Image (cartoon, rainbow, N blue to C red):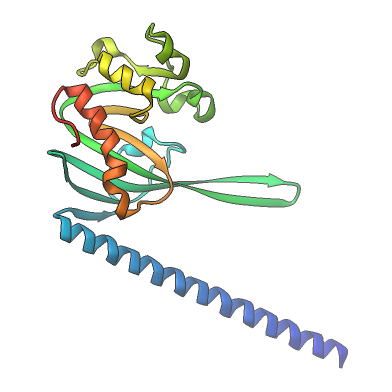
Length: 222
């Protein structure tokens, strides 16, 4: 009888586990549908468009380089410029003894689409190359500005870029009022940890628009 009782208990536990997993999956799908509906409603109300799994090359300039990591993107206009905001993620695994942990790293991507294309160029925090690898941003370099060079580095070739690194842009980085960025083609890009919050769209996009204004000499968020 003892063995039979243990067998019944095992079946009950397994059934409960399966039921819990099903409930979690269903709840997750419901949350995903509610969030998609919220994003779609916001896009319609603001004259934007919403796309799932957009075909973009942004991941080549994002941590992890996950080619399929951009799960959604909103497209519209802000401060007179075409603008995109998306969600991106990649996963890492770590093993300690017999335990393997999987971690998902989530980011908000902000892209301002400029009129003129540019070769690869950017400003990144000093030390980012050692954290994410040289394959992501290439070799960083100093520009001869003491305060800037202490905390920032330039990637790409400013001498051949379509947009100059103006003294005003260098000063904005020194003052910490603009984010790290890269540009390739028409896409000026930055990213932040976390998920997209619709209430913070202007807050997230504004600093990159300031970079766009300082690069092009045209316009600025007001």
